[in-house]
Image 1: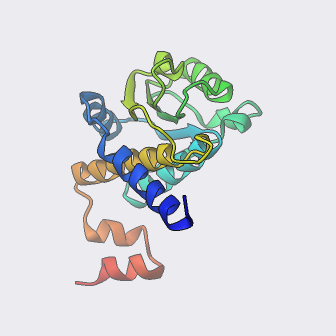
Image 2 (image 1 turned 90 degrees about the vertical axis):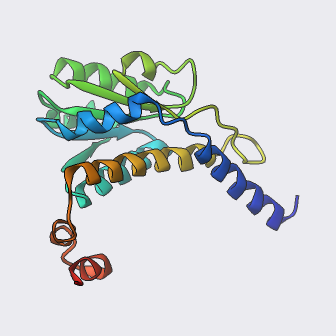
Image 3 (image 1 turned 120 degrees about the vertical axis):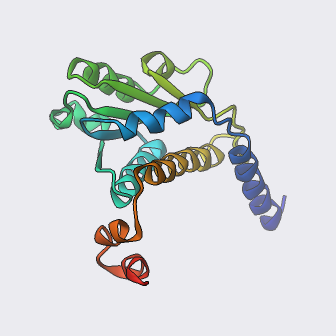
Amino acid sequence: MDIKQRMQAVLSAEADAISAINVSNDFITAVEVMLSCEGKILTTGIGKAGHIAKKFAATLCSTATPADFIHPAEAAHGDLGLVGANDVMIAFSTSGKSREVIEILEMSRHLGVTTIIGVTSHPDSELRDYSDLVLDMGIITEPCPLGLTPSASMAVMLAISDAIALALMEQKGVTREDYGLRHHGGYLGKAARKK
């Protein structure tokens, strides 16, 4: 496969994987749970999924839902102190088998997290057992020539997180003014303040 073909294959695989997402009732309930959350919205994940979880927390903050990312490895060394009663935790893991992610979920339950939302793909994902709601990514074939590099799976994870954030934003009735107050600098802030 030449360079152009490989790039087109990757783009097609990612687009197909996103199009195949089944927006189940758990997706809707996840937005409702976040809307009524009386604590904090916390996100977690490790590796590439951790980067998506961190970006999700940033998107939530910029769309009027305070959120924070907890790195599962750092959680074991004190960062778990951020977790409290009535919090909602959203865990991202394609395989759902990452030991660090499972451990943070186990410990967060003891600290009062009311709802755990898992974003995962593998049918035998251990994350499913720890989650109250599962946002199923579907079965994904990575377009990497080795079949290993997370690309289509990360595109799906990112798309799911964006869909949740923007649906939540709409449900909260966030206005341009609300948005502008959270983006006082840069292009987005200027665009939000334009009449």
